[in-house]
Image 1 (cartoon, rainbow, N blue to C red):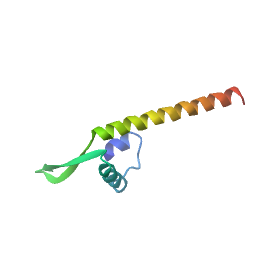
Image 2 (image 1 turned 180 degrees about the horizontal axis):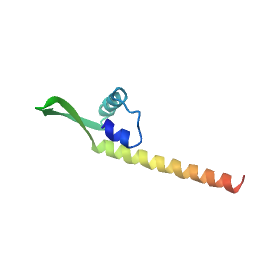
Image 3 (image 1 turned 45 degrees about the vertical axis):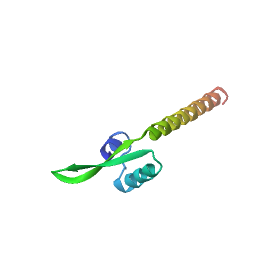
Image 4 (image 1 turned 90 degrees about the horizontal axis):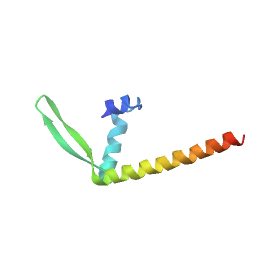
Amino acid sequence: MIEVLRSGGFPRTQGGTLYPLLRRLEEQGLVSHEWQHDTAGPGRKQFAITDEGRAELTRAADAWRQMDEALSRIRTSRQDNP
């Protein structure tokens, strides 16, 4: 997960930041985890987004889009009226 975040534009992502966040998201019911056992190494927690998490993601993405549209209107207004 850290590698995906780093390659997606978050180069400073570290486990010390990510795992507490995942724990909080799990406490809120937005993600869940299950242990994946591997004979070649230690087990790993595999996280998955829940239905409630998907709904929250949609809500947050909509709010972000609204903010982006408002900022675009402000930028356009300022360019038209320097």
